[in-house]
Length: 119
Length: 114
Image (cartoon, each protein chain N blue to C red):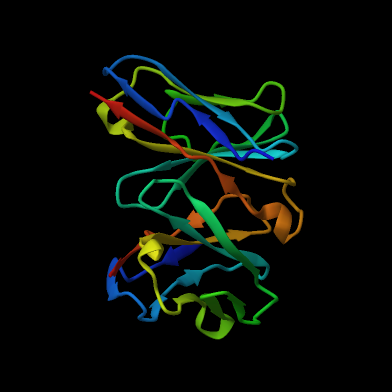
């Protein structure tokens, strides 16, 4: 089936504006993750969901960042009052099974990412 | 704390050369999984392999092979007879059974010249 999809692929916004980034996971995948990747770095964890429940949001940098997954499928990462330091690649991933499952369930498959540029 | 170190920032080789990408990890967990991902110039992040902490058998898939050694906490990746299409940034990552966060290294940029 289809892989993880993200929209928009590119987003340019002005400082102070709110942005909403969308992720559509692989069909049937229970877990959904958000990561942020700065240029020249590896992705860094932001938050994740099992079904519709947000399990861990320890990676969200501050309270301007929030995420939801109301029906256990599509997720939205929202950044309020964007700042230039928020510019990065935002990546979404999904995996088949929730925490506690074995290796195959732990494998995270990534979408193409949304490149955010805050001017 | 968990950590993944990829000491090689950038490697350049000529086509058909063999190349090994190093990965060293730190974790206190006894059960964990190690991964390699490929990020080609187009930017997506592609899963290559997963290895669990109980399985130290080396794995070969075509021109790719992986050497997992718990004694040295390393999970190295070798490309045999490299090709231009192998040019990409390669990330090593770690996840334990106690969390669901992937911990990534900083990546190694591989450039294969014709």
